[in-house]
Length: 113
Length: 116
Image (cartoon, rainbow over all chains, first blue to last red; front, side):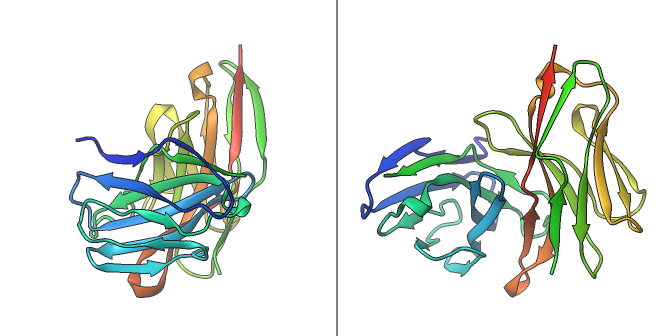
């Protein structure tokens, strides 16, 4: 198993550009989520999904869109990047019946200039 | 509302010395507590968790943590650290979110720096 994979590892965007951060898992996990990590703030939940076709907002959803067309993939879209979105983004997944066993991807470091 | 406070942003320690990373939480309901480790340029890895039962929880890499309900603490300890333990450590509490989803509330992190 590859576990949770994220692409790209690094990205630099200009303000106003759009992009999609990719996340995939091969563990057949129902639940997937996106977090952002900022210095001194830990990780904050952006969006999550409890299954294909079902998504919901987390703590800091503004400026981000998600969709879940398959169990494996959970892309995060930035429609118009802003410098405040400079962060490290982590994707995570888990089984529905194992709420306390969350697996994290390696992260995407995004810089918006 | 639940929150997590990690009392030290950085902890320098010499190799083979003991270390304690402090974590306090606030919650009015039963809690589930976690410690995650993040090595440089990597994702988060679960070190240990407390769900119920014994208040002393043992994790990977020789780490352990003690749940103290009266002091609302969940401090992480290791009796003898190695250079390879240099990483950032996050304390987290599980919280029920909308739709029945259990989300993790993370502390700000403690950077452990082990020196030779």
